[in-house]
Length: 127
Image 1 (cartoon, rainbow, N blue to C red):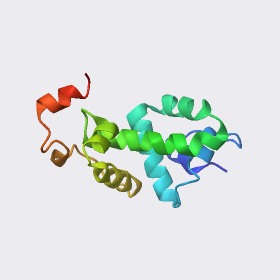
Image 2 (image 1 turned 120 degrees about the vertical axis):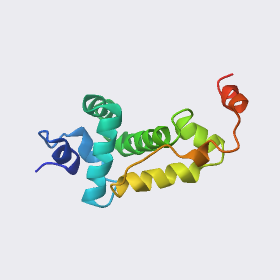
Image 3 (image 1 turned 180 degrees about the vertical axis):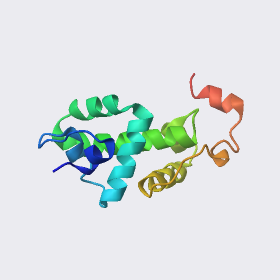
């Protein structure tokens, strides 16, 4: 039987499917599908499968969670991503974005992530 990730990507699934172990930490089948579809659109289906296959099975849930937070962080804060949200004290925005994806919602860049941060401060992130 196909895992929820392969089902939404419409690809064949086997007992050794790299996505199957990635999705164990997400409770509902619908949320698993939403997260997989988001990451496949963000990183590309083949890259997502390659990422998952490149780490040991025990580390795959952590990899998937990390990719989900990074993808969501980049969607709401395209300049600095998840690290920028953490650095600026706006980690709650990234967490809310992940919850939105898991619920099947659509993400948009958030103006509040840029509030109070000048262009000079943004440039200092890269120095």
